[in-house]
Length: 333
Image (cartoon, rainbow, N blue to C red; front, side, top):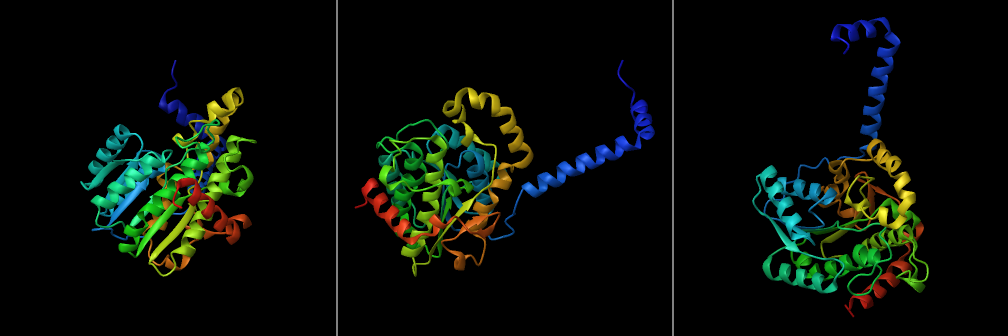
């Protein structure tokens, strides 16, 4: 027989310790979730008349970033590999924001041909590009290769965005003041650029490859800032936080039975201590729109504030060497 509401109340009245415990428990969860939510973009900047490209914007924090940018009145280009999912995301964003100027374009960052074709279309169609948000990424996948033979994570997370940004630089300069925002990760702290084995063919490990690619994002941002001094184009890299998303979809394939057993704990940890997708998008949005960030160009952000990356991420010699290697790998030189 189910307990009556009156019986539940009488039980709680008779056990004040239970009531206090429940209240404290709920309050504790709320406080922890709020603390883990991190920083919030406080800017109310409007983006009417401006154009923004966001890679990987059909899901996760990319989609939430696109939603916020659309609310601010910008023309938003969702650059995605899967056009069916991209159109569904675009339709949702148009409906939610009332901004009909949300469009999609095909972009597969694991194909240099696709990157070049996308950049050519944008340069031909668009009269301006005010913000480029390099958000798309792949994490801890098996030892796969891109269509051009690069290690998948380095090729997608770094080389694809490296080429894309360089091919759109003239349009960004023409539209200055403009910004390039690179979504990196706290995982860069475990990274190292393996110049002697950049594709990790001799020593592949999914986490090692991911960390290298995220460190490359930070180094690319620093060197890009150095090269763009005086152009009005500023650059930012960032850690969005730990967020349950499709980014974790390859963990099963990479770790098999081990991840099968750890998955419940992993998911519970992300839910309890991680961020929502909207919270995870805040630092990307902050770097894209907040006023007065010009003096912080080239820096690495966490929770909407500049944060010190690891020493290798600030090493100018490493950044220059990575840039030169990247140019050769993607065929810019």
